[in-house]
Image (cartoon, rainbow, N blue to C red):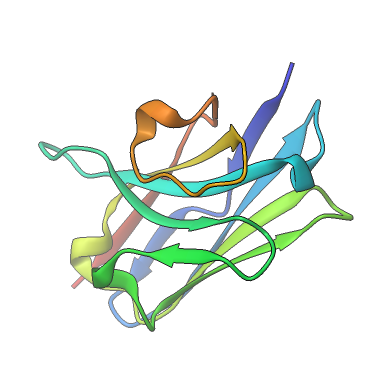
Length: 123
């Protein structure tokens, strides 16, 4: 059974940085499309970034130039480096994995999910 465990969330001031980690167990990271989603209070879940692992990545417009997704297949871990954080980035961030070769932006197309990690950006 594939399990995803996120870490790295916390409270940071606007303009600060955080790095989220998602450790994958029960499967090889290289076999999955990996994505980060977030859900703010009262809002729908949205995809933040996704990675196919070989050059293909996706970022939602609001985080382009500030967030970077990366993968370490040796450690079976995917990261989300978040810089220049804004209060509107405040949300619970979820790591998700899907089998296949195509990046998808709909959460229903992901097979496995982590428990989420809270990111709070103060103004």
